[in-house]
Amino acid sequence: VSTFLWNFLWNGGLINNTFGAAATLVSAFANFFIGLIFAVYLLLMKESLARQLKRLAYAYLPENLADSVVEICRMADDTFSHFLSGQCVEAVILGCMFFIVMTFGGFPYALMISALIAVTALIPLFGAFIGCVVGAFLILIVSPIKAVWFLVIFLILQQVEGNLIYPRVVGSSVGLPSIWVLAAVTIGASTMGVTGMFVAIPAFSVIYQVLRKDSAKRVKEKKIQPSKLK
Image (cartoon, rainbow, N blue to C red; front, side, top):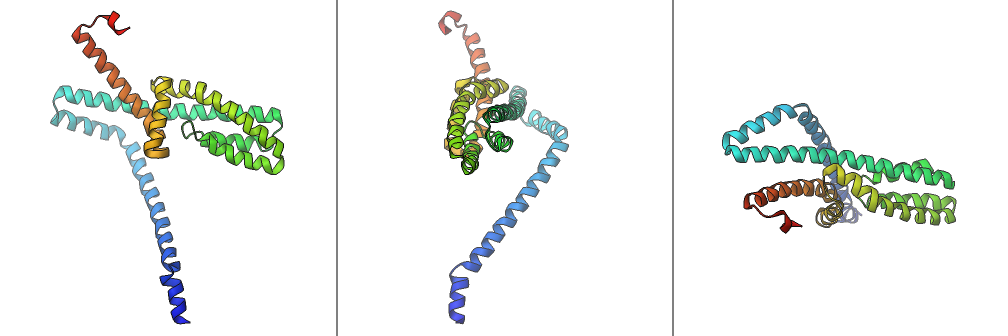
């Protein structure tokens, strides 16, 4: 019996897996709180850190290069902050659209499902589908017919949001044309998943603005005729 219990509990992986899962959970919580505290310190000391980094840049880099680095960092800061605000505005718009349509359509759990879709819509372009699956399941419990209509309404509103509202709201907030917003989300999702969706759009925006300024400067230096650029 003792041999059987030892093999079952330890060699079978029960205790080992339990300790492993507990250690992973504790480590995740520890990393979360450490990251949170570190983020708070960064916010409290951001002006001082910015001055220190600028001093280092101008101390160890040529002045022209330091100017470019500072300009790009400032551009990245503005772009990422505008992207986050634009993403939140887009999520609120989508949630309000669903709430209005579902309220007039007499759908159950209208407020809860709309809020869920708004939260999941923070994931660029594709996040609202997560809220759709959960919302359709909740409505299916009450009325299968309304669950089907909810899917139809979701597809319509998602097309309107994905092709009209999202590229204009988020694209204008980061200074990126609509087509490049779609390209950034696609490339970011295929390379880094959900994290790539968040990072790709503002990163593409910074690259786009830097290339636009540099190309305009080079074209002006080469004295290219404007007619050749049309």
